[in-house]
Length: 510
Ligand code: FAD
Ligand code: SF4
Image (tube, rainbow, N blue to C red):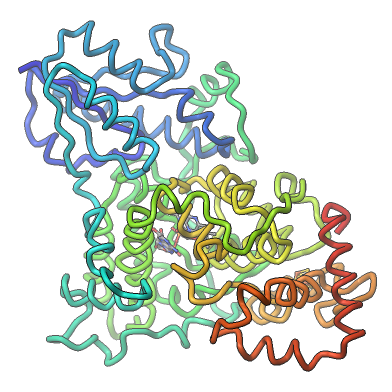
C-alpha cells in the first residue's frame, strides 16, 4: 500500500522502528514551514538548528535508501502549512495510507488528528519511541492524589526502571542529594574549555534570510554550536561524562559572570529533537560512572539522572495531564508586560544582564538563570504569564511547548496555583548573591531595599508577598516569609512598596 509517513522537526529519531527496513512504497516527508517559524518569534539559532538538523536527517535517510520528500522554506510548491502540504502530497503521489508519529505538542496533535479524521484513506499514529513514559502515564500515576509531587514520580521511575537502585533501596542510601547540589562556583574548581561545535549552516541561514522570517536573538559566531546529528549528540554526551559530570551536581545551581554553561550538559536541544534518547543518555552516564566511581560521587550522577528521568518526564506528563486549560492559567492574576530589555539585555541589573545576554547570544540559559533570574524577575514584576511564555518559547533553542510551558507557567510563574511547584520560586537579591558573583560588580547594592541604588529584587520581593497575600498567605512553605513581612514596620513597608511600584512602572530605566 502506498504510504506517506510524516516526520516533524522534533522527531529526528534515527532509531525509530519505522527506519529498520526500507520500503519502495513508503515515502517519508519533512517540511520547513512558516506555520512553525511564525507561531511565536523564535531565536535565530533555534530556527537554524531545527532546519539544519532536519536537512541532515533527511539526507541520512536518503543515503540509507529511504524515499524522502523534503520541502525547504523557499520551495515554490511549499504551501507553508502542515495539512496543506500533506494533502498535496497525498493527492500528487496517489497515497493510500497516511502515518504520523504522535506529536508532543497539543497544537500539532489536534491539527493532525483533525486532519486524519477527515481523510478518506486509512491512517495510523505511532509512538515517538523516545520517552520513558507514555503521555498519560503520569496522570494515571497521580490519579486521586491531591498533589502531583515530582519527588514521588521520580522515585517510582527509579524503581520501575531500576536506575541507581540496590534492590528496592536507592544506591548510596539517599534518593536526593539536593543539599550538596547548592555550591557557589568561585573559580576554584577548573572548568575545561567548553565543547562547542562549529557547524557550517551558511546555506540554511541564507534561506532564512531570503524567506524574511522574523527572529529574535543574536548569532555572532555564524556557526551552530549545538549537536545537529546523532553522532554529534553522542560526542557532546561523551564530553559531558569525561569533563563535566564530576562536578555537575555540586554546581548545578551556581551562576557566574564568566561562565555561560558551567558544568551543564547542553544536551537539551539534541534530546528535544530526539537526535538522542533519554535512555541512551542515562545508560551512558551510568556506565561511565560505574567505571569511574573512585572519582565521581553518586551525588553528581543522581543530580543529573533526576533531571532526565524525573523533571523531563514529569514536565511532559503534567503537560498532557493539564492541557489545553494549562495554557490559560493565571492564578496569581498578573497582568504586566515584560520590559524591552528582555530583547536587548540593556539593563543595569547585572544578574539579568548576564542571564538575558546568555539567552540572546546562545539561545541558552541554564536552569537557575531561567528560574531564579529571568523567571524570578518576571514573577516579582507581576508579568502576565502569556508574555513570559512567549519569551521563553521563543528565546531558547530547546524550547518546545510540552517542556517550556510547564516549566515557565507552572514551575517558574506559579500561574497554575501550585500544581507543579509547592511554592513560588521568588527571591530577593540575597539568594542571587549566594549562588553567583553577579552582585559584586552590579550597579545596585544587594543589601538595600530603598534608595536610588537599592537592588530592585529586594523591594519587588516584599511588595510581591504583600500584594499576593490572598493567594499565598496560607501556603505553608511561605509561612516564615509572611511572618517576617508581618513584623515589618508599616512605614518601611510603605516605602518599599512605593519603590517596587516605581520599578514596575519604569522597568526599562533600571
Ligand atoms: P542540564 O542542566 O545539563 O540538564 C540535563 C538535562 O535535563 C537537560 O538537557 C534537560 O533535558 C533535562 N532537564 C533539566 N531540567 C529540566 C526541567 N526542569 N524540565 C525538563 N527537563 C529538564 N528545558 C527544555 O528542554 N526546554 C525548555 O523550553 C525549557 N524551558 C524552561 C523554562 C524555565 C522557566 C525553566 C526554569 C526551565 C526550563 N527548562 C527547559 C529546563 C532547563 O532549564 C533546561 O532543560 C536546561 O537548562 C537545558 O540545558 P542543559 O541541557 O545544559 O541542561
Ligand atoms: Fe541582581 Fe540585585 Fe545582585 Fe544587582 S544587586 S546582581 S540586581 S540581585
